[in-house]
Structure formats: structure tokens, C-alpha cells
Image (cartoon, rainbow, N blue to C red; front, side, top):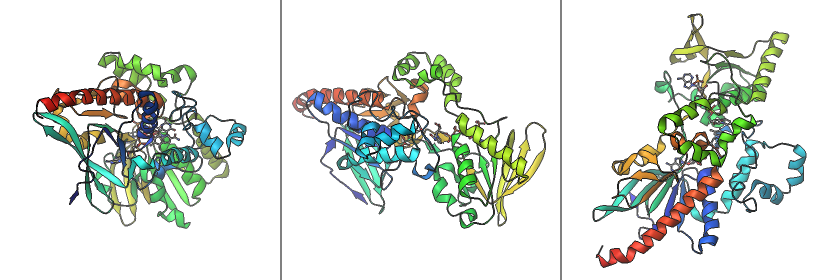
Length: 443
Ligand SMILES: Cc1cc2nc3c(=O)[nH]c(=O)nc-3n(C[C@H](O)[C@H](O)[C@H](O)COP(=O)(O)OP(=O)(O)OC[C@H]3O[C@@H](n4cnc5c(N)ncnc54)[C@H](O)[C@@H]3O)c2cc1C
Ligand SMILES: NC(=O)c1ccc[n+]([C@@H]2O[C@H](COP(=O)([O-])OP(=O)(O)OC[C@H]3O[C@@H](n4cnc5c(N)ncnc54)[C@H](OP(=O)(O)O)[C@@H]3O)[C@@H](O)[C@H]2O)c1
């Protein structure tokens, strides 16, 4: 049953998801309140019961892949109270962090930083509600505003209204063939569920467990390390379809592609050139592993050869032809792409570290899709739309094709959130000026 929560309020903006992207937006909007002399009425809806940043992947030893200086705000406003440095200061760890001598805090600590920032915006955040769809509300022949329908953890539906939405709902675990049919089995799971699922595997109770990890990106490598270090009874095969584990290019000239200024460069290219840039720098982010982690994994495999206890394998050039579950385990038919040999392997668990898709915005916005131009956006992340869509749709994390590889990362959050924040203020000003005209026209 629909609960018409705040049914009379039309917010200036509703943010869908309260991950780092919309958290950065909340900070930017607060800053703009001071410079614009008025505030926008904004709320954020988050499906998790409380703030967590990829919580099921926060294993010990997992480090940030970006400098702590690229936090939610410092690149725009280094004197903001929401900087990582201020977080350290407030928690009495600034000196100790300096002594660590690193730019790359643990992801657990960065998660704690994000939770701390999010705590400052509790009054705007609605946790434990999953947005189901975003619907058009017509006034005359125009879509004047949008209805955001969510479901809380008790199964009740809520409706909220807004003149703009910022959809920042993140990636969706990519489930690949031949595993789609097996996903109901708790022994087969995506890396996004790693911590909660691994705790119910036999190795968590000290029993021998054969685990396959599918993929050769950072997630796969971190799962391998965690199983090796935390679960002595786990024997792991990392199943890689490429020819080797490859390093992430994090060198300084290349790293320029993650600077805010680079967004303009990418956006100003024709579509074909944008695609070429994404392809050229694919190995900064996808299907690659931090070079130090590669060396540690190699070291573990080498040490096995010394001791003769061949506990783990990294199996390269392997295509998974088929998978089936039995009471005895999960049987994978591996096809060696170099030799053309096929061998069956049996595991007690399979972890799909197969990356993420970026499509949740399409599902959420399906009811307004007819007004949108294929989910393409302008430079300030507003979805291009037909003139009858007066309400605005902004996208964060779904614009890699037009804005470059930083779009799914933390790199440009301070700049992007300000750009969207300013666009929201401009929109609200336009709508304010139009109101008297609408009243005159009797709308
Ligand atoms: C394991 C892992 C580690 C990473 N580490 C780094 C790193 O070190 N550096 C880096 O730059 N990038 C990293 N990334 C990339 C990552 O995308 C960004 O760090 C960042 O999380 C993007 O923020 P976001 O808010 O756009 O998306 P997300 O962080 O994915 O947040 C989306 C939020 O929306 C919520 N949500 C989703 N659907 C709904 C719905 N229907 N209704 C309500 N709420 C919803 C989710 O619960 C989530 O809280 C990592 C990614 C992963 C998977
Ligand atoms: N510490 C950290 O900061 C941290 C930790 C984890 C993740 N991340 C970030 O999260 C993002 C995603 O990383 P990720 O490792 O989850 O994903 P990813 O880099 O996209 O890697 C996905 C892997 O899955 C493989 N794969 C995809 N489809 C497959 C199929 N059908 N069959 C077999 N293999 C398949 C890919 O193989 P191919 O190479 O053959 O395509 C690739 O090796 C990145 O931005 C990464 O930096 C960061």
C-alpha cells in the first residue's frame, strides 16, 4: 500500500542512493547555500539500513586506489570541514596518519570517513528505503515534476515528489554465463557479497574448502589475498580468461586522465574519439590489479613451490564452458584457450569477481524514458530530454561514455557535485521565475 509521505511537498531535488556521489552533492549544496543566499530543499534515499561503502568488500588489507586528497571535497574546497584531513584531525589520528607516510588509507578507514561525513547529513537522508521507480507527474501537457516511489524494509511503499532527481545508484554486480541459472545457490555469489557469503562457507568453520574466483581485476585479487590470509583451510583457483594478471597503470602522466579538467577534454570529443580514449586507458581501471598486490600473489605462489604445498593456482587463458551444481559441489568445465584442452574442476564455492554493469538508472527511470534522449547527458550531467520534461534528471556514475573513466570513481566528485549543484540552483531559479506566469495562465 502506498504511503503518501509528505505528499504536499515538492522537493527541489531528491538524490537516489547515498553513496559517495550524492554525499559529495550534499556537501556542495550546503556550500552553495552560503554563496547563493538560499537553500534548496533536498533529500536523499538510500536502500541500505545505514551508511556503508561497498561494505561486503571491506576486507583487511584492502587499500584505497586513489589518494586521500581526492576525498569528497578537498579538490574544490580544501578548507571544507568535510575533508579527510579534518576527519583525521577530529579523530585524533592526524599525526599518526602522517607517520604512516601513505597517500592510500585502508578502505575500512575511508569507509569510516564517509560514515562520519554522512552523519552530518542525517536530517536529509532516508535510509532503509529502496527506490523502485521514478514517475512523471503531468501538469497540463508537461511533466512538471517527478514522483519517486520507494519501499521500506517493512515492505511499505512511499511516494515523494521533486522537481529534479539525481540518480546515483552505482553499479550492479555483473553475473555472467554460465552462472545466471545458479545464482540462487549460496555457494555461488558475486564479490559484492563477499564478506557476508564467505562467512557461511566451510572454510570459515575450519573445514577444507575449494574456492574458484572468476576474474582477474582488483576484486578478484583482493578475494584471493583474503582467502589466503584469513582462511587457512581454503584452497583457491583464480580463473582468468586473459593470459596473465595485468597491472593497473597508475603512473603520473596517465593519472592526468582522472583530473577534473580532463572531463572537458573527453566531453568535447566526438563519440568515436571518446570511445578511443576509453579504450586506450581501460587498463587504468578495469581488469587490472594494483602492481604491489600482483607481486604479493606471485610471491605466495612461488613460496608454495618451495614448500611443495600447492594450495592455490592462478589459471590463465581459461574459458568456463559450463557450470552445474551438485550435492558434492560446483562443477566447472574449463577450456584452456592455448591448448584447447577441456577439464572438469569441482569447487565448494564460486566467487564471481566479474565486475559491475551500469544500468540501474535505466530501470529506475523507465517510466520517464520516453521523454529522455537515450540517457545521454549534457556537460553538467543533466539528461537530455524533450521540451515537455520540465523536471530535471541528473545522472552520476552513468556517464563514462561521455565524461570519461573518472565518472564511476571518486576522482572528480568535488568538481562534479559543484557542477550539478549549480545546475540545480539555476533550474530552481528558472522555475521560480516561471511560477507567476503559470499562475497567470491558470495552471
Ligand atoms: C570494491 C570496490 C572498491 C572501490 N574502490 C575505489 C577506490 O579506491 N577509488 C575509487 O576512486 N573508486 C573505487 N571504486 C569505484 C566506486 O564506484 C566509487 O568509489 C564510488 O563508490 C562511487 O560512488 P557512487 O555514489 O556513485 O556509487 P556507490 O558507491 O555504488 O553508491 C550507490 C548507492 O546507492 C544505493 N542504491 C542503489 N540502488 C538504490 C535504490 N534503488 N534505491 C536507493 N538506494 C540505492 C546503494 O546502496 C549505494 O549506497 C570501488 C568500487 C568497488 C566495487
Ligand atoms: N581496493 C580498491 O580500491 C578496489 C577493490 C576492488 C575493486 N575496486 C574497483 O572496482 C571496480 C571494478 O573492479 P572489479 O575487479 O570488480 O571488476 P573489473 O575490473 O571490471 O574486472 C572484471 C573481471 O571479470 C572478468 N570477466 C568479465 N566477464 C567475464 C566472463 N564472462 N567470463 C570470465 N571472466 C569475465 C574480466 O575478464 P576480462 O579481463 O577477460 O574482461 C575481469 O577480469 C574498479 O574500478 C576497481 O578499481 C577497487
